Amino acid sequence: MQRYDELMFTPAVQALQDIEGSREMYARSYGARTRPLGADDIAFISSRTSFYMASVSETGWPYIQHRGGPTGFLKVLDDHTLAFADYKGNKQHISHGNVDHDDRVSLFLMDYPRKARMKLQGHARFQDATDDPDLAARVTVEGEGRVERLVTIKLAAFDWNCPQFITPRFDSAEIAQLVGPEMDSLNARIAELEAENAALRGQG
Image 1 (cartoon, rainbow, N blue to C red):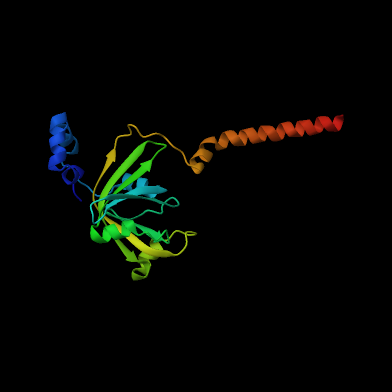
Image 2: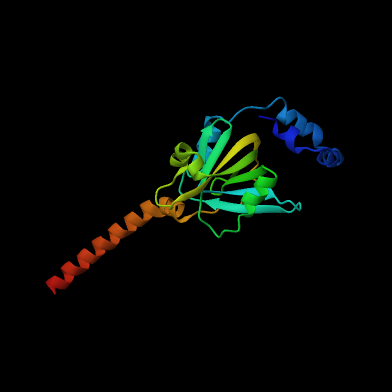
């Protein structure tokens, strides 16, 4: 796997960093940093319920697609390979067509409550699910329907972003986890008061 800065900091990018005075800072911070996915990285990826994937069309236009599913639908096959199942959708096939032309993709994995963002660059491949039954079984998510295609991504580089400007957002499960104890306590108190009210009415 490559260093993220070596892959993404093109001459044009470096020229702008020179103007801003940030190029040396990034050179020091990245240093010789190049490694496969570690335990913390894998845990983060495996806990996602969605991500964004960018590809580029034959005419040079970027396209960003949102992918979502139950926790763990994005599988880590090894320390440099990801995979997910592709189900029946709107049949536009934009990402698929783009990848067939240019297999380079960029993924953004967001954790809004914790204000964390992971960026991954890689080479994607779409294939029919019948071509690899073992992989299809590994990435299939129960209740999501029949898997039509498999998408594998060989990672080229990845990096973590700072949390600045990420607005915390919570899905229904996260909200339930946050307010669950308070709701349980409130419901218990309501039940207690209803029982007292019923008892008082009985006395009357």
